[in-house]
Image (cartoon, rainbow, N blue to C red):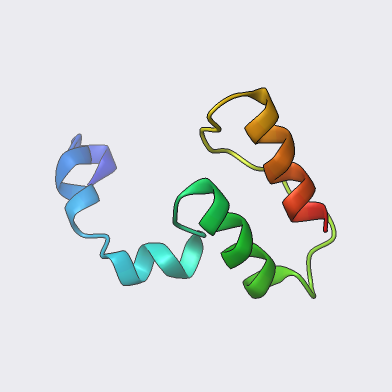
Length: 67
């Protein structure tokens, strides 16, 4: 579909169940908890990409992931 330029159509084919298999989905504080429960015993390094309220909030989320 991407080769046909049907990006919008392609997005409608991905259900929430499929998305949740490949990603941790939720508000930032909730996503930290979900990430740790899902991957905490097998991951020792990661990157994060989500909107924090401000730099203090971002630092608290990072600390939460490290704890």
